[in-house]
Image: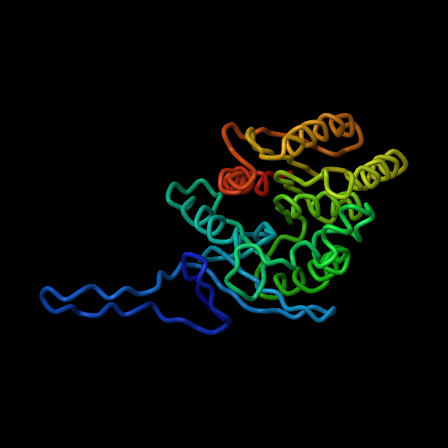
Length: 296
């Protein structure tokens, strides 16, 4: 069902919206403001098996589906990220370079908050460090695997049912804790996505617990190189990250994973000059779209 995204960040539930009718103004009458409707977008709410409801945003091209189907980029923190990704995708069609010929699917929450508190529960493992556990005792955590199941078993099949997609060209973008989650997806389900983009990943979280997963991932690849054959990982960070370890950890991860190219993992890392932790997403949109469109 066609829907619309109202900006900035004024979100509607499912339903069909007609283009707004602009009133005819009498001379000297004050203009009447109407909501902005973002073209080529749809939105609906989807319940998960674990009882939570998520908001699914879609930006897709008009016209015939290409042979083999559209590439798909899944974006976490959809409330904050979708508008930027959707318009960046759409405007690429002005010069017919092909970067608009993809589908962007953002996963968010049914409210108007840019960052819903539930994200911490969806993107993290159970907290082990006692200090962090005490600090966040009133916040949700530890639900990353059930959220991953929702993404893989509910969202992806629904997108495939509604649109003509290429099952081999699926990418995932996450920022901050979402970037940490994206690394967990790579480590726990290598090959599930052709491209993973981890922007300012919170590797520091829970006393760097993600490093144990990285080591286990490396050991798996050494035994079964085919697991990550052809997969891509792009690590992004801002030059002016407010927490310096966000930058140093990202650079170090990129260097550690470079030798895995011999086992089929194509990894790269990039520092975005002048960007802070919260500005990395807007700066990285086009870079992420290009990474998602790379093939093979």
